Length: 432
Ligand code: CA
Image (cartoon, rainbow, N blue to C red; front, side, top):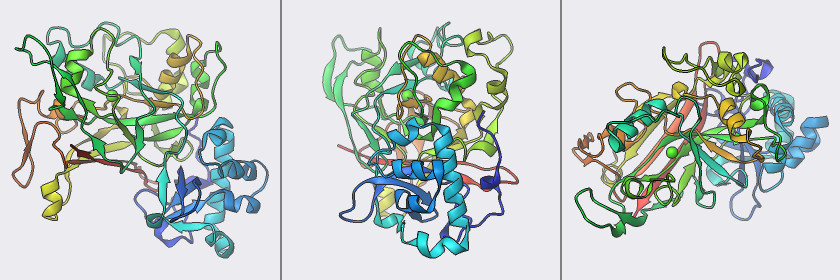
């Protein structure tokens, strides 16, 4: 398991990068990986977020040694796939070595030349995403959605045995900040005798987390559950935009298609499992009467430490709110422990038939709804299928998203005795 605490988790450690100390997302205890280009002309390259700055990782390679130096050089590429392919050992050594540089006052002068103000940089997708699979691990979400689509039969009998997922679309994955064009498609009102074509009227977000595959496996060679975590590089925030009216008409018998392939948004930074080590938790016990996972998905260590103590939040900012200078309104929040399956179980299940996972593959957790009021991970749940509009503080109401609406997701981990770390934010605005 990747929950070893070391000197990089020392809550009292501070950096000579002043903005990092007490930073809600990027203190020196985090050091997430991303790809950026400095203002204007610079080529995309790997970086680490530190406070309000970004470190050009390859630019400090000559100050590092051994595996850390090799990893830093791989981070000089325009995507991080080659670095992630080297596995957790490489990113761990790199994070430890950069932590040492950024906490050693003696290195300030030399390393400062490799630091850029984040606000002056352009961020890019951190990896070339070969494949994207979206799972459905949020059991409260699955039950809520199932109740809307199939009132008599909300949770199908396979749910508690099989980590349900579908193969998604990578070409339309975009970074936080890219506008989302409202999709058009076929929809059919329940009382209509045939479908019509037009812009979706029931556009929704889905609050999810992204799990990034690091080291891959060969075709035909499954990943045992006890080794699955070593194939995970880290996590980010994912918004799986969903057109509910298109979904309702197309989803049977093969699942989501155009309702979800028009755009997906991810946050820019990959927070490594090493940074998350202090925040690992036991997988919540299954409710009494639920079946135990089959043997190939069962591992005592995974059950003891396989969940993530990460809090997720979603905010809405309408065009009018921005015009009036009002702050975004929090719609909901909840824990990542709402996953019915662990990240390791998702990796093992995905590969169990012999499917080869590749560095930079994206696995979505599925919408994570907490099961408590205020923990709904989508508007279709908040508004009970669009029947109960929600009211915003300025008097506006919403059932689904309107043009000009900006959805902002944030996530963070905090625990007594450790520095809080964050995943940054995942935001995008709907345009017509
Ligand atoms: Ca989803």
